[in-house]
Image (cartoon, rainbow, N blue to C red):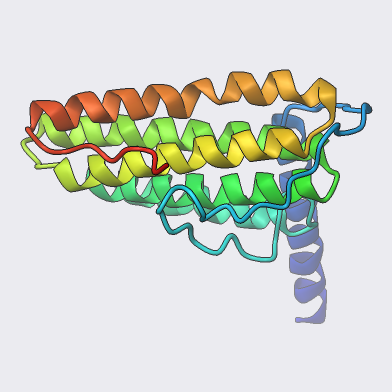
Length: 203
């Protein structure tokens, strides 16, 4: 039994190391060296009224991050309902954009930028799952409203993160900004078709 337990432990450690290697290789690498020109300590909830979920204490720079990311992937994989998948994608998008904001604010733009990119990829997936649900006859009006608000919030966070980023990281963040802009426009179009009001940026 002791020998079997030892083998299981070694196998578990090997799998964990493999997972870490896979997630590290799948994450784009950046090397930003120029200092940020401006730092703005501004409450992210001032302008866009959209509550964001707590991202947790395990961020992409944590040793346990591959396990958390794998859990998120498994959660999506086992849910085949497009409505539920859309909700999960949006949840993970919201969490990751806050993670990206925190990483960049702490001076880790090298990891913060790809985390922001992943957040917006999840946001895009949320919209696509919504489309799939809509084609099945599901009324996705409420979700589209939420998605439009989320897109505005993501744009706000990316914009403010740019003010805390090294100069050479800003072009990448500016390009990432195109994703929530596109999702907002598509969501507004969908809401217009359903004759529902679309959320707008508060002054």
